[in-house]
Image (cartoon, rainbow, N blue to C red):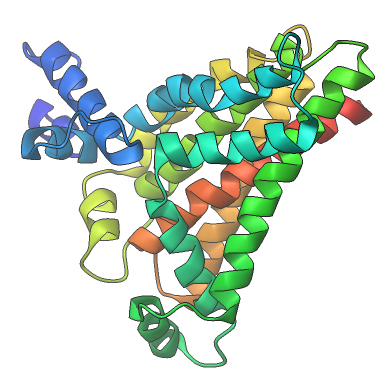
Length: 283
């Protein structure tokens, strides 16, 4: 595989003279696509990002730190009640990442309850109306985020700390990195069933590109130090979510669409947070 092939199917080749510049451009594109931060909205940034799935987990680290910040409100001097902290956490998640991925949750939720073949489910995916399946899916995701935040506040109470211990905040970052990694993994190993956002991303990467994605995500398992299991559980739960979504969409929809990628991010985040909380409290 030549340098041009590497750039086209997983990012900039290490020996490229402009590799550093292209990497920064790809990161700008990742921030522009994966968050509401007003950078990386130009065509060059998008193109570099689409060829660089490794940027997903990298962006997960600062995004996770930002969305974890409201949990500190549980500590003095604020000492905000846990339910209010949970609401602030949910608001922070969508203030930073936007609500675009929730459209994928809604669409897959509607498709999941369809009694029909692949074509019928694909038709539902393109339907802009929100059905019962999509409504329930959205409610479960938001409820899952809120209850995970409550669990993290309880972690602090269970350890005798007032508020949320810093190590528990690492679970939030690990979960965000895990959610981004889950989506990037689907980009690398998935095939899109039709033209669209899914094909624009999956068509630019190969399974080999998943290796740097996983390598960059691995340090997140240590973010709950001195505890190891919570961060590791968060990452593994996110990857397991990606595997389950991939299996389901291949059987039911014929491949990985943009909706599947967005839904994977949201569902994997919830799964990772709860896995981290469970590992913290039970092991």
